[in-house]
Length: 537
Ligand code: NAP
Image (cartoon, rainbow, N blue to C red):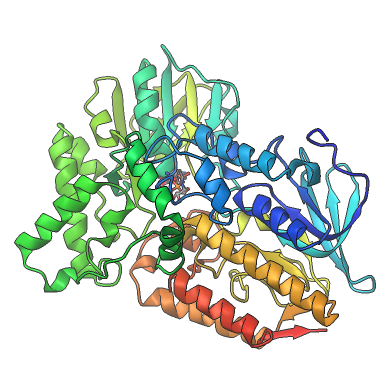
């Protein structure tokens, strides 16, 4: 059956919203367990985040051999990643391969945007409405909507009036974009900008980067994967996957290490150099206390700043690129290829918005108090309404008539980051209150999908129709998530982790910082206890 030609039925055991990493595996797993399932996907193909984020230089910051499904030993043996960090096209190719290999497309309805999901108490079913006005019904509604899937424009006067070409990194055109000979502006210096800036600078006549807050970035040292290395990984992939599952962040890390605070300065410097040379997010694992001890963190922050000074020739630009007012890693650390070097190019200008904020955008320019920058193309690398944005865009109404958006007015509340009191038979894959964005997403997605499937199987076996967390259990979980975060330096940055990038969004640190292994154990204990903290009927 071709894409978009899923079967005629409108009633299912489960409706899954989204066909990214989470939705695809959820479908595969539910099908295997004998549950009729329909996946609804707004895009015209599979991939989720990797379908939409096609900006130049888009690449994963988790190593490809680990950023992949572990559920099928055959799949992991037959697929070979070409580079240390996979590009967006290669990840999309992988997900297309997965969809074909497991024959998933026949249960996916593409080009289908979900507008609302209401729980019908009398029918004990979710009524899931799509844009075309059609309603599907299902006993379970599973949100696989992703954590970074609701792109956000900046709140700048006149933002919608720019009459020349505009782009958002999170919603990039599918056709190639050619910036040759153009004056290009980019607003934002998060991961998306840091990856795309070196590529755009090589094409554009001039690139103007509008930076409000500098980010910490470490080199990727990306390279092709040697066949011997791939063979070695594949010879013991199962053990590597197990290491990921039992780790803090979903990476195969074995050594526990020591705290920066107990190490002599010379040794500390040596370790940072070593980690810098290794590249990637592991830099934050140089020492065990970098995300809990401000003084230790400052040693890492200063090391990165010293690298920026070394690389960027103009001292004023180097200073503007150096973060000073939040701990390294408290905002998502960026992983780059030639980002800081790009500022040595004569066709790149950094505009420090802390000195002169953008006052307005006109039909052809970005205007600050001191300058007007006329541009042929303007790129918004301004991020996402993270973790709750995609869920809030759907009117999700629970058993008592309250919507999830209303329930989350003061911040998200989700038991185990998976379920919400008042919303029976609703699951959120990598929802707020789970490790999600602080981990290798694929590891966390697989754990949630497995847990949800087992829960549904348990309910079927016991003849149960309805599961919902008890409000008390949910309160305890939300308190735990918040208390754990307070032990760390994460809350000290104005990050999207705590909703700080969206005007009016409650400032609550959303992800669970306790690590994927501890979290998995907690979820497993709940299941093994017969779903303690949940009411089942
Ligand atoms: P982001 O990290 O939220 O960065 C958005 C940028 O836009 C920030 O620099 C922000 O400045 C700026 N901005 C927003 N509104 C602005 C305004 N009104 N005026 C000026 N600047 C404004 O978004 P992102 O770069 O898309 O990345 C989001 C997350 O996606 C990452 O943290 C990462 O988890 C994930 N991601 C991963 C990869 C990867 O795997 N390599 C690549 C891309 C994205 P402020 O900081 O001052 O708000």
